[in-house]
Each structure stands twice: as C-alpha cells, then as structure tokens.
Amino acid sequence: MNLGAIWTTVLEQWAAFTADTTALLTYSLVAAFALGLIVAERIVPYRRQGFFREQLGSDFLFYTVLQNLGLAYLFALVNDWLKAESFLANVNVLADAPVWAVVVGSLVVHDFYIYWFHRWQHYNRYLWRLHEAHHSTVDMDWLSGSRSHALEIWINQFIEFGVLVLLGAPSAAIIIKGGISALWGMWIHTNLDVRTGKLQYVINGPEMHRWHHADYDEEAYNVNFATKFAFWDWMFGSAYLPREKRLKHFGIESEVRYPKHWASQLFYLFRPFGKDKGAPAPEDKTP
Ligand SMILES: [Zn+2]
Ligand SMILES: [Zn+2]
Image (cartoon, rainbow, N blue to C red; front, side, top):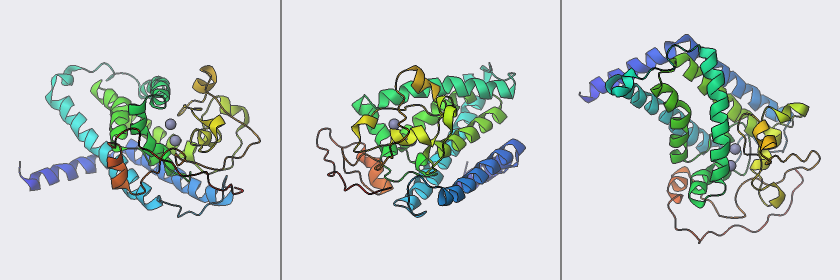
C-alpha cells in the first residue's frame, strides 16, 4: 500500500466516523458542554484565574488534540484491524446487547476498576510516575483533566474502550461512553464554585475532585480517588469533603519541580528515583 492509498483510507474512515449520527450528536454535546463551562467559569469561579492560565496551550494542543484525540483515533484503527484480521473477529459477546445496557454496565464496572487502579497509582512509585503528569497542573479548569502522560492514556484507553471493541460492543455504545467520559472529565476538573449538596455522595464533581489535586495541604493527600461515581470514596473510606475550607494550591510542586513543556513531561517519566526536589511552600494568597 503506498502513502496515497493509506491517506485515502484514513480520510474515508474519518468521513464514515463523523457521518455517524451518534458520533455527531455526542461530539456536539461535548463541545457545547465545554463552551458552557468556559463561560460559567468566568461567572462563578472557585478561584480567580485568567482563561489563559499557565500551560493552557500545551494542554489543548498536545494533550487534548494530539494525545487524547490522536491516540483515540489511532487506537480505533488498530482495534478495527484486530477485529477484522484476527481471531477476535469471532468474539462478539456484546454484539447483540442493547446500547443502553452496554453504556450503563461499562460505566459502573469501569468506574469501580479505575477507582482501585487510581488508588494504587497513588501508593506505588512506578504507577505514580505514570500519573504525576495529571497532577502537575497548578490551575484547575475545564481542560485540566486532559493532561495525562501518553503511556497512562494508552493504558486507560485500552481498558476503557479497547476491551469493549474487542468484545464486539456496538460502536454507538462506545461512542456514547467516550462522550460521557469526556463530559465527566471536564466536569470534575472545572473551576466552578458549585454546591451540589447530597449529590456529592453519588456523582463525583469539582467539589471533591479538586481536593484530590491539592498541594501543600497534607490532610488532603491521597483522598477522593473516584472518577465518575463519588460513592466509591464514601464506601471505601477515602472521601474528603471539608465544606468550609478553601483550597489554595494545586499540583505536586511540594514534591518535584515538574517540567513545564509537554515534550519534557513526556520523557521526565524515565528519570532516576530519589533525586526529586520540590519548591518551597508559596505564600498563601486568598483565592
Ligand atoms: Zn490521582
Ligand atoms: Zn484529576
């Protein structure tokens, strides 16, 4: 196959993918939700910070477009190829399942798994290396959730979506699940001063997840591991929700001076252990 033919195949696949009504509706909803959050963060912010906060461009171009979307697309091509060309073509246990059942079932099962995997990442020094890029952001907003090391994204995308593809799940279910994950990722990281009351025991949101990103506040270390459903944290004793306290610093600067550029962040994973040095505690500013 020459380069021209490969390019034509990629374009055809892309056209078929975006022409799909479910995909178009899902992506439109995700884009509208992002716009809504961007506007709402200007009106009721938790912390005062500019829209163009530090590393916004890198989070958008490198992490969101290149890594999350680019890897997801490559991943879809590899999965399609595996499904067509390997023994997996005959594995279709989810092919006849209703779309809603696959979406709901995979949401709950995957969320339970990712709660424990995420918790393990915080206690195992090798797995923490995969995860620290996500914690390196010092300003939380609608886009902060996109920052994760490429290797972590690759592992997580395989577990969350690759398994569904390989089990023959309907593509509409996979697209909807992807849309829900994108919405929830934006929601839990948003810089909105919302109060959701008792919903915080069920639906994970910014009120709890921002504490998961706290720095220079040891009370808040290693808490709130949940992604979509907050009840895992309440069930397994890792919930932290101080109602009156305000969070001041996000990140991992107390532990390590993390590089600012995406490419450096990509390779920083492979540094030797034991030589990290953090920055001194910053002067507290009223948020
Ligand atoms: Zn974490
Ligand atoms: Zn996060």
